[in-house]
Length: 126
Image 1 (tube, rainbow, N blue to C red):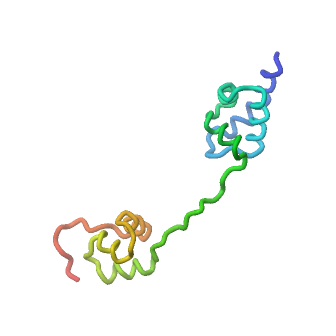
Image 2 (spheres, rainbow, N blue to C red):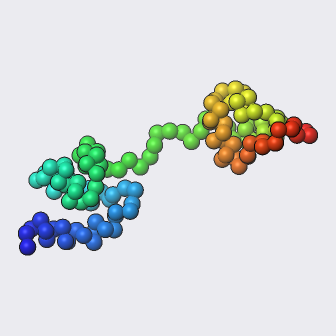
Image 3 (cartoon, rainbow, N blue to C red):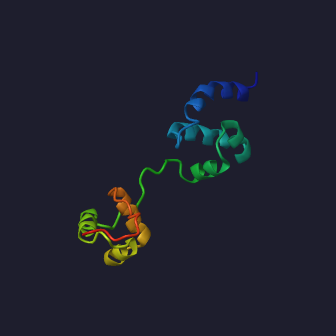
């Protein structure tokens, strides 16, 4: 039995643990990149069942990104809830103009507040 085959058998349980995850652990990434030094990207990718793009990304930065540099929202949720209570018949684009954001941003914020859009065509009695 060749060394490569033995190594593949030894890594099989370790590898199978991580096939359904969104991200691979740092130890696994380091091991794959150590093997990659001896092989091409294509051979390493097929050997470990990961994508070539993942290998190239790991080669640039081995640690996984844990945070995104994006604020949750620039819409004040309390002010939006108050706006919905004050103007229940307004369209989303009108709310977007008042808050200075896009209509899609208002739609997502209303979804977070669990406020659905009006589905009837007649005006409500408010």
